[in-house]
Image (cartoon, rainbow, N blue to C red; front, side, top):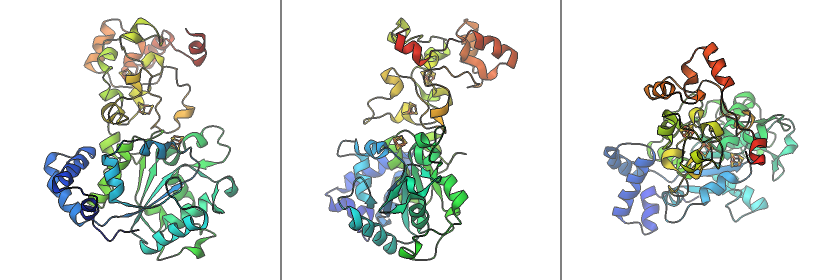
Length: 385
Ligand code: SF4
Ligand code: SF4
Ligand code: F3S
């Protein structure tokens, strides 16, 4: 809770030199897709910025989002940012447990009411408050009471952003994404409010909320969003699904290194055919890259090592709503995916596979092409076809 120091003070205390600090600012600018000319402004802002208190709540989740964040090697931008904030409460990472842990959350709320950042991973069960509780408090109450004093809310992972696995059909727990929950139930008074009302309660429906989806999300995307808020004190530009444009503004397909094969109509037909060995496009093996918006193709994973498509696996569309119910991970998408680009025209002209230009063809033509569209199901894979 030591957020009386500025971010720069905290970094200096760790032995980070001025040069290291400027490198940190440059990395932060790069993370947020800002031009190098913004580096001095970021440095000036971080010299002044107080270390914000961050309260991280985990509801119906698998811990994968936290695992993602902690799977980075030190020293990293992630590490620096997490030294630059005051992570006051995180079920998985904190040493305290039980009453001491809850006391830490309440103390952080009391000291920073109206100023802390609330991070949530996991969805919120509304079918029965008993489905998921922490220290005897239902997720619904804990979210309502903690959100009431937050300056901003970040929904980390597809479970928090869109409901994720718990929300998949038939959604037995009535799982809701954080944003939907707050919009629907935000006017309710949590039963436990008397314990932790430390100031005027904000209307939780109007608190800025950023979705950082992915199953799990890319660690540097999580930290990039935090860095943006830390630096500028406002949420970054968001798309219609409340995702930061800097990271989710372009599709995987737009930036995929296999795109030239797609444009030429060269597709792997199975995971062990010649096309797969040559690194051809994975569209026919179910790749959802054309309809998935995320930064994997450029940021990559494991310190820029690779991402699913580079490892030979189609994108599952994990940063999109309801990707679990999307009709099959290994089935080629058969809905319109793209405008008819010049290269796609080339692909059609070359007699390439049918899926290439569905988005720009008329319905009749599309139906005819879909009939010839090779689809690969999980059974085919298990048979080794
Ligand atoms: Fe786990 Fe994925 Fe949900 Fe994160 S988004 S909690 S990794 S299931
Ligand atoms: Fe890459 Fe998938 Fe697009 Fe092919 S369909 S270019 S593998 S994103
Ligand atoms: Fe998810 Fe697709 Fe990236 S499955 S990890 S959005 S390549």
